[in-house]
Length: 213
Ligand code: SF4
Image (cartoon, rainbow, N blue to C red):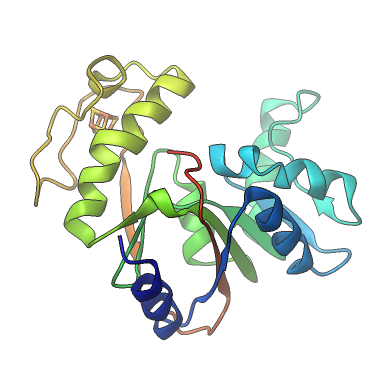
């Protein structure tokens, strides 16, 4: 894994990138990048949870659009997800980051990938260096063998990978959109973020720790 090359190429792709050593530093840096009073939202992310970033936002001088608030009705939750598309700062992790400077993300409901691509004024990605892969083939393989199986297990999705620890369509170097026929499938839409037109709309905080899946 070549961290220096990854950072150089992410920057070349107009995504400002920072490297920190710990999740505590990642939290402090993420908060420093969010303007006071900003309307924030986030994708479901084990990494953000491990860094306690959402909790800090909730306690800070920001408005957090919390689609998981247990007091909301289903309709209100849907409204919250839609409002997140126009928020000031959207936070997420990434399923894989290539040394060529691309972000690879796979989503089921797809509100997360939708917001990463377009809508929120700013996007902050927090990811452990364990998410760095050589290229897109490795990114696809990583999702099929690590990210999707562990997330399916965490979310209680009835999929082949949740039981077997790998995708039903596992082939290195191909088969990106092939998968299971489960209603709980989380691999629905596949996105690659390469060179961005809006410079530094996407900011990436790489953490020299293993975080998330
Ligand atoms: S397509 Fe299905 S089996 Fe394959 S990784 Fe995704 S959820 Fe798991």
